[in-house]
Structures are given as structure tokens and as C-alpha cells.
Image 1 (tube, rainbow, N blue to C red):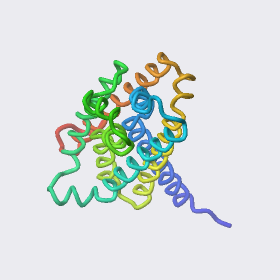
Image 2 (image 1 turned 60 degrees about the vertical axis):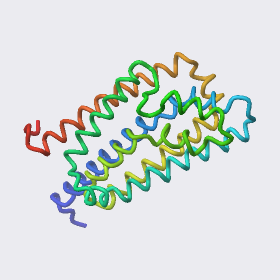
Image 3 (image 1 turned 45 degrees about the vertical axis):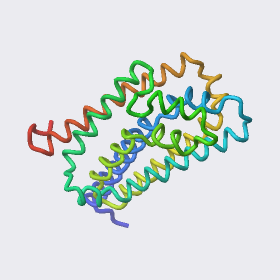
Length: 226
């Protein structure tokens, strides 16, 4: 069997690019949804309920985030065309939103962009808060939507779209595991552990926000690509 060096090299580059895009999609969506930062609110909302119902609420919140973010992923290109929004404009806007959320996460607090104090208070009085506000906007908030839209704008092949949808599914599955076992996770990590984890995610999110902003400026031709 004879291997063509150029074809093997090209296949390797394509595989490497796909892996990088998949990791970017998973990390950016997961950091924005951030079920660990939502733990304190989820525990407050589900205080006094049994474990079975707590898992049911976690499942409903995770499914809501899955459906909502997947809908924006599928309809992303149509939304761009409908409103005449260019990818660079959305990259810059998304970068600003991500930066605001990341800066709040560096202080180990939930950003008002994702969850307001009024929504958290209202959730405690609702019979079933799994859809609103736990699913939307605490998990699938403006930041996560902006990240999905930017990724969709960057996707050039169907496999990249598959990677985005897979990243959303994996994130939703992790949300269910974390929130469904919120009492155990909270005990294992402790308040200090959760704050450290949120700060680390915040730092990575700030770096991602700057990269989105730089990509937008490069695509506009304002700066040259490094």
C-alpha cells in the first residue's frame, strides 16, 4: 500500500483543526453556562425538597438549556442573515459580554448578566423553577447564547456544526450531573473550592473574550493577524 505524503499531511491538519475547534466550542460554552457557579442559587431554590424532586428540577433546567442553545446553534446563520449582522460585529459584541461575565467570575460571584438577584429571589417562590429562571437565563444566558452564535458564525463545515451541538449536549449533561448531585458536589468542593473553581473559569473566560474581540478586529481589517 502506498501512502501519499501530502494527503496524509492534509488529513492530519484537518483532524488537528477539528480537534482544536471542538475543544474551543466545549470550553467556551461550558465556561459560560458554568453549573458550579449556579450551585449556591440552585441549592437555595431547592432547599427543603427531596433528592428525587431536586434531580427532576436539575433535569428540566439542563434540558431547557440544551434545547434553547441548540435552537440558537441551528438558527444562528439565519439570524445573522435576517438582521444583517456580520460575524466580526458579533465577535466584538460577544467578547464584551464575555469580558463582563469573566470579570465578575474573577471575584467569585455570579454575574448579573447571567442571573439577577430578583430572579434568584423569585425562583425560590416558584413551584417549579427548572425552566425559568434556572434553565433560562441562569444556565442558558446571554453569554452562552453569544458564544454559540460566534461559534456558528465561525463554523465552515458540517462537522464543526456537529462539534458545536455535541459541546452543548456534553455541557447540558454535566449540568445535570452537577446540579442533580448539588448537595454532594457542594460538600466535596466546599465554599472555598467553588470560589477557586469559578475564579479559574473566569480567568479563562476573560482570555477567551479578548480572543473573540481580537478575532473581530482582525476580520474587520482594523489590525493584522498576529
